[in-house]
Image (tube, rainbow, N blue to C red; front, top):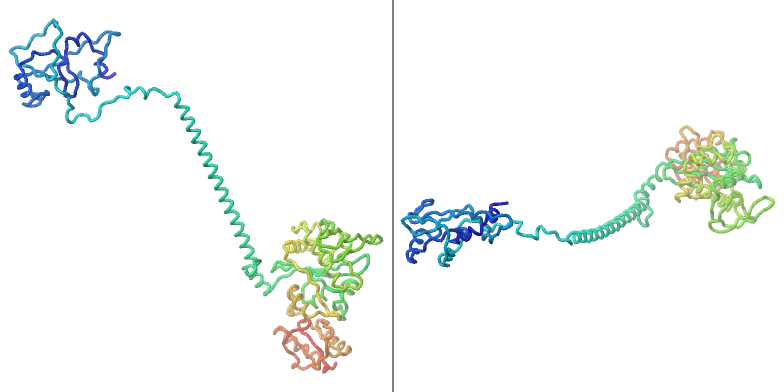
Length: 562
């Protein structure tokens, strides 16, 4: 409790009757005391004027005038518990207990003695005698309010918690809705960004690969540059033997490591090759006779480097197709079933599913009167379908090859064959694969188109492909019209140590013999060939070779065997 509260607690009603309100202090607080005798009006006015009406000393601070004295108000005794009365709180809450108040009094010879008890109720002071309360200068600007005077601060609202809970619920629900909307917008933006990245990446890949129309990407330019330069190729020759009806078919499987493309080149049986003794024969006949030396003969004719020979009998082809789960291919003809040969029927149309036996029947079928190129084209479709089903993993492809149960050439083991088939299968699945039938003339020699488009571009055949120190390949083309002259020239070349390439017969005869070469590095060899045949150096010229060989001799009527 503070001093103000103590003042109210010590209030005594009996003492209040003896003490009368005689004025207010400079702070506006009431002052109680005995009412002095009232002087004459004029004298009181002059005396109050001289003593500075509100208690201030005109002679100096703290000095008492001769006609005034300080009077300390008496403190009433505190009433007993239960009889306490609280007077009205002083204005502005100021405490009057510790403030001294001087009251102007009329001068008297002696201070009046206090009366023992008032005989009658004292007369209340006149209004004009009570000084008007005034707030002193420099005093506090704001009244002193205490928090205990405001009861509503301490009184809790019964509904306040409910209101707070409702506000929190409303705010949290609104925040959740806003958060859900924000997350939804973020998801939409993220999805758009991802889709845009996919589109840009796809277009960029197509542009880089050169698959966009009218635009050549770096990948396409790089591939074109690689195609124009030296290229590395892995190649094997496949001989398919029909164990039921007889006959053979030959194909080359090519993996271009540089351009990452694959190809199947089908070779007609009529294609001319050279035996070990230098004599010429047809490819089909050489394969049926055992195929010894056929790979080297093909290298001589085509200017290639074949890595191995794969003899594939039809029962093993049937097993291979079954191991990969069958194939799908577009068939150009319907093949009727043959119960005696246990050959099932093959339907005609796109995307025909072929089992192992059906694939063998379709690959070996050749209709009556059809050219050999038709049957070779069917074989190419079957090989392409098998490659698309071969596992892309080299180990898995090797297991597939081993599961066939075929005895392979020692120069071509299962691991080497499986690795090559896996690579070719990847090219086939990506569409980077082509199938060509090599065209030959009736005499077995290659056509000019075959030399340019297939031998050079696909097989990489080159007239300068002979290894250093190896005997040059010399092609002989007869334009004399005399078979004896051609045989004599062939014998002369074989005796000279050259590798003979049969160029067949020319379409028409020509009067003069001509020896051509394409690469400047082969000029010296061309001159040596002319000397071997007994021809002057003037017949040697640089030009386009009609036969795939380092040097080509076209015999004219002027040639006379020595």
